[in-house]
Image 1: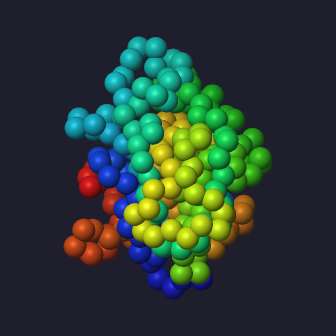
Image 2: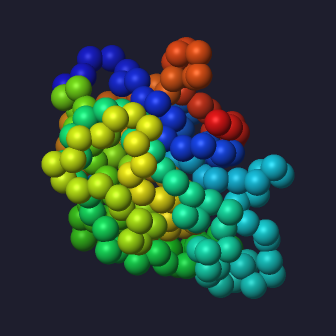
Length: 209
């Protein structure tokens, strides 16, 4: 297992809002299952910080993922290595930002956890890099561009931002762990600024590349 924080390149371009950051709490997602203890989420947003326009219908019902600014945005390998998992075929479901839809989704979360990694991560790519596993999750259905056994370099395209798996709106989940199984152990991560300085973005921070 890698000792100390694992350094990653940012796996995207554009404007992204940070959520569920390990800079704010650990475990960042409220659980350590599936190696998520130090995971971080990035939501694509516009110049006003919105992932999609707010509508009256969206307060009560699901929203089409295609209406979100980041749906289909290219995702890049954040580290060099070998692709060990390239899972595709999970559907992109409706986004759930409203209170009613969010409550229903929270009540069904336990069932997705019981179903395993694919139900939680949705379409995802796992890269073995420097002895650890780097996971990019919730990719758009049909967008995965790599296969298990492929060698990738940091910056290579691997897929697109989607809303598959345990996701309430299109976003990217990034983690480093020793395994993506239920008992996987999360590994602290840092990202490299353009000048090479390591940092972990905090909740609410806008990252722009």
